[in-house]
Length: 138
Image (tube, rainbow, N blue to C red):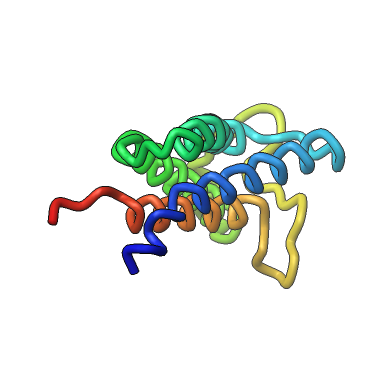
């Protein structure tokens, strides 16, 4: 297990890069206009791609204590956004009062896979990988 832990930082960086690329694809290529909650999720994801990349290059696992909270908070925003899309009562609590409504589904693959769910999966994967790759006192 210890041998696998050394790659957790790289894998978390890879997940962050894929999420960043997917986000840019949806907004710049597919022309989906991000809502307010999408922008908040980007605020947490985009720095992760940069910071985890630098930390991976330098082999700095100490950065995990700083990036793990970012990933967890971003995951909670994604969870709220997903629930807002799928639970009709939550749409009334939405912070999206102007522009694109946060409850809008640009994609709805298989009836449940939406952009916020994809972001949630990325944040959960990053969080789990960072948790597994942290330095432990032994």
